[in-house]
Length: 223
View 1 (tube, rainbow, N blue to C red):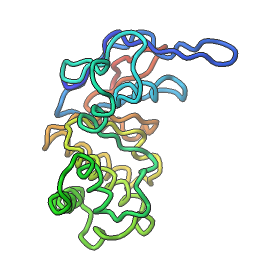
View 2 (cartoon, one colour):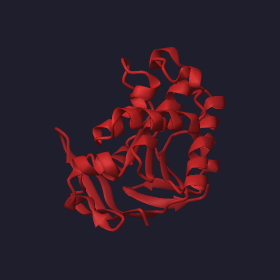
View 3 (cartoon, helix red, strand yellow):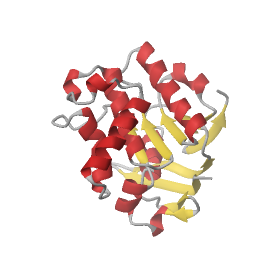
């Protein structure tokens, strides 16, 4: 298992009451597979994603990355070196070109500019971005192209754990299908573990495993 959640509990207090979001979540994720996490708005999907991404820690239970609890790691290093997140809103840096956006996580890790640039161009090619778009700014790209650049940037983190938060939410049906097919290709051909949080029921059939949020727990369901 590359990632496991064991007896994970999380709650928060509002002005009026306490909300128990997660009530003992247990699940595991393997490399080479695409997982879907689905559920109603407010069911806890975003909380689970935050815990897996190391943005926060569980109040009870553990999140394990390759057997090591995230609570025993430096979360900043975990987020930089162990996990990559793809967002619905792309979150590309607007004043950087496609190549520069993909170079960014590698330069944060200390890679020299020339090597980072060469790798960035390869990652962009891997996600079917044409070379003519390598040195264009995000605002000049289509939504599908921007999401593929965001995936290339995630690959540049050089971890085998990819979390995708509604990656097709801002895309039309054709581009949504292309993005899901690309994520599947990464899982099958490159042994990535891809975990997709989504409301899009049209993409569920392409998942290997689907978990549904129900009453504060993740329940494995049918595709």
